[in-house]
Image (cartoon, rainbow, N blue to C red; front, top):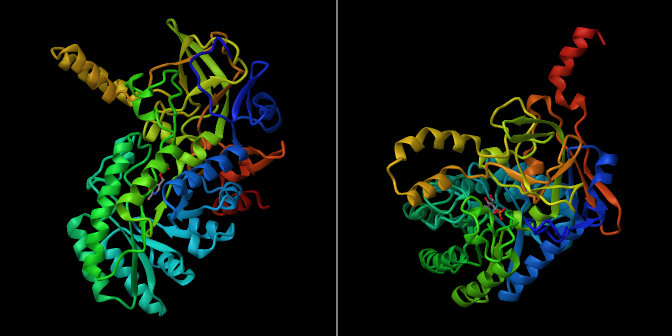
Length: 491
Ligand SMILES: Cc1ncc(COP(=O)(O)O)c(C=O)c1O
């Protein structure tokens, strides 16, 4: 490891005899037993992240509560750990609500977000009596009132607002301004308040909610959202004639995906700027919670909804090199994991750091183009679309000053063109993609007849728990196709 200065590994990872270990388990041995590609989670890391975040939030505000954004990872084993650490849960669909209840969260520990909740989902949430339905539009508030009245119940809701703050690493995950599809702007809020005033028997407006984006690396963005909440909660309280009981400040706390070795990651690489978190999530939420206590008062309950900060660095994706080629001087590596297992790598050009799990003692000093196995030229771990666009645009920008060109280039090409790995990396080697615990498991799919990966977890007692099995070939077809098979074979 001494020679390899490029990586700062998450705390559940270590190096033993040149191999990457996850909570003490050898990555190569895990793949020998469970196959590749393989997600490996650390139970201890999930628990530490959850407990640490809650502790930091409570340290800043005595009435802080943490609701895990379960879309980040709704595997029941992971939810069980998070529940065990005293957190609540945020759900986004009837399916996630069902999972939350199944794993034992009490209705009062559940908040329900979403932009298009169905009547059935709302009925279930209202009947169960969850802590709050976070309302996304005036139309939805009227729908909630109608459903609640039909059920003879009063729905507890929080109003999701657009604060006009653009936090988040990429445009696709900035959710705090009016160009995103979430939440209510000022005129929409006025319409919602009129509905709330007209339906007091059916609606209990208990709180307000915002979520400014994901991978928010600047503490000032969170500070601005507290100030916005202070102003708007007063305004809503005055309009309804009663103060709000809880204020939900959302999630978005960042993870250091970049693993740069410089102390201040922000200046280290333009390409990786949005993926480099200078401040860790727990101290950051402590500061936000303390500001909330000062500006919103220590009596009002404060909710946080972190997702990636609790699970991202608790897992790696181990993927075998299946093929390689040389194009000129440039070696290309072909992994057995592509965007079928990490859709964010293509959809929002997300950066996942790579290390060679079996050559951790060798210097990572050779540049490779790294791609996935799918029959799709977009299945690359570099920004194939951005590179293409830059190639088309750059001749027309030739007259611009070099700094401006560089700035534009960094804005257009969002991922490094190559990855540095040991020069001996070859087919059969195992590449570990770090920080793959958030969003990936739920987003896997079977494109190109690829099986969704197995996931295991190193548990607190030194054992290994299977979180999900690898798909079997039979999982590639559903009941309707099975019927076709049976008819064809007469079976
Ligand atoms: C409403 C809401 N809350 C919380 C989260 C969790 O965000 P993060 O994983 O960045 O903490 C999301 C993510 O999309 C969200 O939409």
